[in-house]
Length: 377
Image (tube, rainbow, N blue to C red; front, side):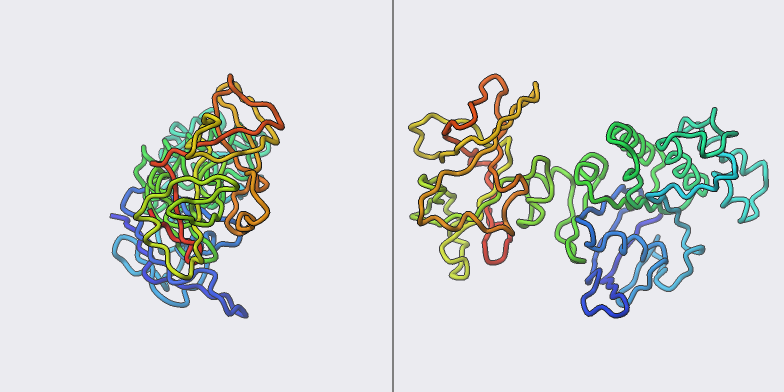
């Protein structure tokens, strides 16, 4: 058993008032692939390094397989790390690089060779075992780094942005290999990345962290379909969710010069602190072009269109009147240069400059309270 538990774990770096990781409670099940995702500087690498024993834990404790390892030396924790840079020894062959940790541990030579050959077979590296790292591509070097971790047969794999140095095509390919490999080996894995596409495609579960505080943990579909707050809603998904603040008028959200109906149970949860406003979020694929006379739709002026063959995207500005100032809340906007993004059939793309009506699928609308940024529906 190699379940990993973070129990109220806090890390405050010397000279800092604010914790880099604040009261983290996280349970990684035995054999699970958990992806820890968040923007740069959010505390995800610190979390990984605390589990590895490379960072001190100021409060709380960390358990691996039911054993408290909070103050244990890294070498005694039975973990293996894969870093962003491959950290291979340039003067050693692939085989020697992969088996080096076992050699230091005093493992017999024939056992080392057996484990290295087995790992090389899994990683498709058999023909490269006698080469030096300089004779390998970036993707092959990263697989050697993975092999070095595999031969250790650890309780836990820790991966710190291992795909960051690869080009886009190789990243997709290696991503698939790592996910398949982890399921084949069944080793508990904590994978750290800032790339939410990696998180959605690789993890059994995703943990989203912001400024050292855990925001939400769940299966990829759960975070995509039911984000707990505005941050998770805007962070997970590409293109990201359209998120804006709108006034609430008679149970409707006023979007520019138009209004759309809101579910009563969400409106009833608004408090005086919300100042009669609501945060409306919807994904580009959850809205569609509507008829010009549709009353439950809003007007959008098209400023750009993209035809990707299989999909079309329109980017536009909501047409708003002078009194409508709530749309410029920069902290809640999506990242598409404050433009609203809609996915449409590429065969019916409107022209740039057109004014179109947009209807949101009411079942796929995400509503949040402006005061707390927490989900309402």
